[in-house]
Length: 144
Image 1 (spheres, rainbow, N blue to C red):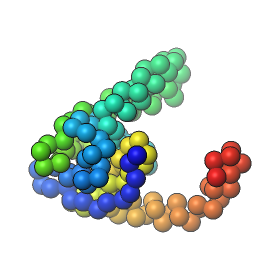
Image 2: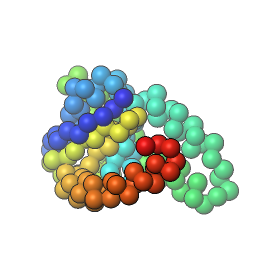
Image 3: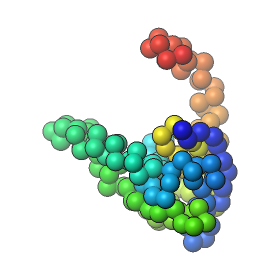
């Protein structure tokens, strides 16, 4: 399971070093794509295969499902983790998430989210303020 929060640097060659703990979990190939809330999603290759299949199975007659499929699938790139544990972040994904030199990698169960450091801090502050209300809603679903 991918958990934890790590501050890393995106170098001027657009390479991002993965935390050693994450490297063990994701293996040698990952898929990087546009995520939600202005971050990138990074999936281990096997996990991505399951998610892509679910997207493929969505009905194309509905605009929302077509849009989500396009957003995630057309924005995706598969990449290898190099010997130093780094991945290359394409320009279009770097721009989408407004990635600068300092980025946050957050483990979220089956994926890693890649955030602009400032955007992550702002998001985290907002979510922390509403954690109690979210827990109440999820409690009604039997999750907490």
